[in-house]
Length: 574
Image 1 (cartoon, rainbow, N blue to C red):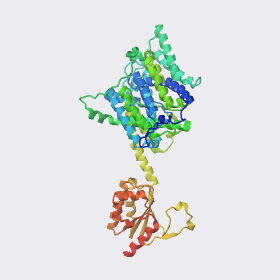
Image 2 (image 1 turned 60 degrees about the vertical axis):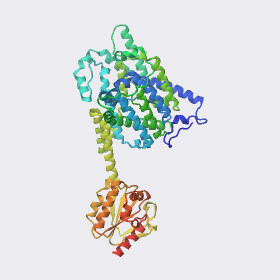
Image 3 (image 1 turned 180 degrees about the vertical axis):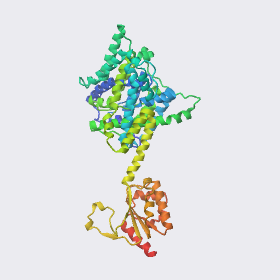
Image 4 (image 1 turned 120 degrees about the vertical axis):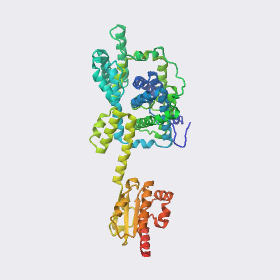
């Protein structure tokens, strides 16, 4: 079977059915890995859902549906989809502001954005998002997750306010609640120690699952003997005790007083943030998987697959999902070889959802908090953060600004500001590598590729009196807007100005505008502009804006020798 759409959408799953590509041995490996990954995903899906302010079953629904679709339609052989910690703070904000219906709309909008990105072949662009931005908001998310989990980890009983600073103020002013609830804190610390130390015992079975079993066992024993009643999922979501049926299709509801248009308008920004987070996290995980296996993913197909998952999952009660690096690497390390691993993982989670949900109510919230504290630590990238603080001042500024905006203000604002800053810094750096210079020599080499010729064997051309040669190095874009004016003010007695553009890979609309302005100014002064070394791509841009007609096709040349001959003709005519 071969599914192709304009060469962009090529799911890896469908490539398995090519002759000889899938064997019984490969299926067994995928089956075993899928079961193990499902066991790893179970506590994480529940913990991420509760931390996001939604019910545990919504986390499992997401892991099931999104996990299946990401593997079925995705562009990676190994990526495992599901809910992740990166979405926690954005989900909390959307639910508080717009309710579950608003979260459904925002997630579906994000899915639409991802599909558009995929079909527009934007997959490769996300590789170039500056590292300080990624580390800044990832570390900020980690600190925010840790802050929200301190409540259940230490056993605070009062309602937690929203906002990073108010939450820490709450903790310091309610320490008496911890003193009166020490068993909660003790259980959480024990579960955290189990997670940390279990990796020394076994790398196959996740420490989070062992902590879940140990914590739940202690909670049940204490309740049975009447020693202590721990806060559990059941005490927070008592409706789960009766089990869960298959989720049904549901459409998002819009507040009639607000209206659909205003709702969409308010959710565009968080939806874009969800899409950006999804793209970054999934493609980053896919690249890491490629490095570990030697395979190669299709980034555009992956974006489309992620988009489909995020458009479909909310219709059944799910939350935003993306490719999860930890689960993906667990799949690889346990023998997973194809997208079938992710499909098996989703089916196993479906069985757990249908038959084991009544037992989930006994899981202590402190145990889930310990799991999320460990997730926050792993997300924090504190080593990368420390490393970047030693770097360039502009990178440090982007890192710290993105980090503090994520923690104190809002993740959406942090990403938007971080991206704008990255664009500004990119323009600044391109300006530093792009330059305009006046050639003061009387002679010039008769070649457009000086780096690959021997100067002693190359003919030299004489620059006639009254001719000025400019050399543009690098892209001619808006960043070089005022450079020509700076040179013009200090030059006199010029009759012909040759602009050498052999090193200009492209020219944008602002560059064209400035070139046109230069021609107009020099024309008023009686100076003729000649373009030399114009590439085909730059020539096409000039033709689109009609600059070729203003300058004259007879004054645009691919080689400096022709430009100098034309300059001599113009001077002789004058």
